[in-house]
Each structure stands twice: as structure tokens, then as C-alpha cells.
Length: 200
Picture 1 (tube, rainbow, N blue to C red):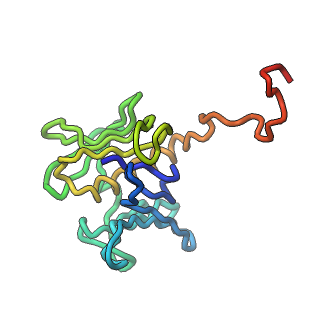
Picture 2: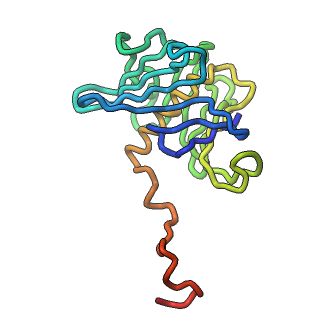
Picture 3: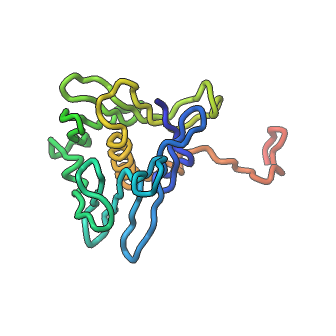
């Protein structure tokens, strides 16, 4: 399943499939010094729609996750440290590991030229991949989009894939920047200069 980020802002985005169906939504609110992102999926009631809440790191506290799949939820739940949910195995490694709801160990790894790849540690099977692609068909045909591609036969709950991806990519963007300075810009937004290719 391909999940496109619309817009490409992890704190306020919707994960949309190629046929235009919204599968997940991320909304972020600020309360005093806390920034909390809520990841939701379509459901009958508000309580059933909550995938997770992520309280992002501040100068007071580390990033905390509250998630039903991890046994804690909501404002009253104690939560789990993101560093415990997505743990390192090496001091200088950018890879992070997690235990899925199926009991298997998974690894998010940044692969140069591709992006984030989630793999099962036991089988080296690719579970999900985040990258920039030129969409060939569907709602976004002909557009270059960021996509989280989840393999159809994965055994880990897709909610955990989305939750772990949001944390990994948010941390990467905080560290490296969001890439907005690397995207091409229209240098002449009014359309008044150099229209026929001549010099200004």
C-alpha cells in the first residue's frame, strides 16, 4: 500500500492512498511548553480512532509515546519513552530497532539515495520504504511525491509502521532540516521578467 503525505509536513498531514482514501491523519497541538501530535485513523468513534499520541521532546522532558498497541494511551497514560520504543544497537548508528506486535524485531535504516527502509531483522525482508517517487497512476499521477510504501504481506501492525515512521522522519528533519531550501523555487513568481529566456 502506498501512503502519500498530503501535505509533506509530518506534524500536520494526512496519509492518503493512490485512490484518494485517507488512512491516517496527524494533527499537532501546542499546550504551554508541550507539543503533542495525535495520529488517528478512520473509526466509528474518537476513542477507537487513536493510533498514538507523541509528546515531542522539550527542554523539560524527552519524547514520550502513548499508544494502545503499547499498552498505554491518552493524557492519563504514562506513556513510553521514544528511545525505548525505537532503540539503538550501536552508539553511532542512525538505525533504530523496534519490537512489533508480532514479537519480531524490525530495523529502520536510512539508505542513501532511497530513504528510510524498515526491514525484519530475522529475514532481511523489506516491510516499508519512505522515498520520493514520480507517481505513474492514480490521484497523484505525474507528480513527484513523498510516499510511505508498506508491503502488503507484512506481519507487523501498520499502525506501528506509521507511528515509528513519523518519529524517525520527524527526528531526521529536526536534525537535518526539512529540505525546503533544496527544492526548486520560482524565482519570478509574478511572471514579469526574462519570459523569453533573455537576461534581465
